[in-house]
Image 1 (cartoon, rainbow, N blue to C red):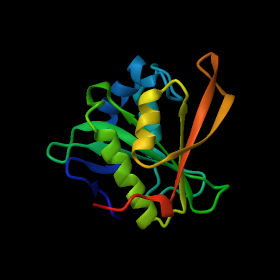
Image 2: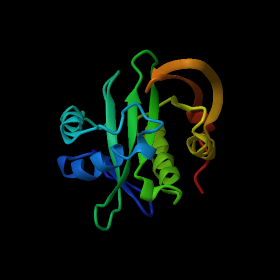
Image 3: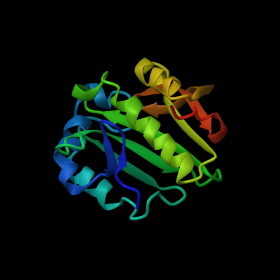
Image 4: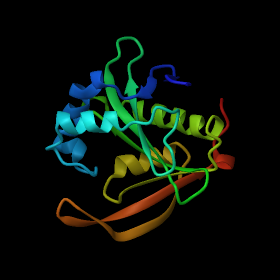
Length: 183
């Protein structure tokens, strides 16, 4: 197994039960949960269930998800996570999502982590395409997705009903052939 995936400042590997307190803390933060599919009532039991359902293989099977913890490699502090979803309806295609604790936002951590995950998916997993979507009002994530080389492909108006309202989603993607060259 190739984990942890490393960058100069980060180590990425599947979430563990030791991550539960920090994981739940940022999922319960209303500012973090605002643009996500969960609400601030997220509990330790929810986290334990998610971690128990993690695949034991390097990547999720078609239709499955894998949550990679974004950690400080020195002391193991959990900064956030990157979700990887293997799309069963599209061959060699993955969807990603990223969440950071509020105290770790605006430090380049998400960009560094997502860039490393994209590299892993295109090289180790032989992905052809990686997608992501975000609420059109979530400007920081739109900026992040563009910064890592993803292109906005479409907008889906009132595409999802979440937290009592219809939300419009911007869809982004990058092909293996579009991955920026390594410096």
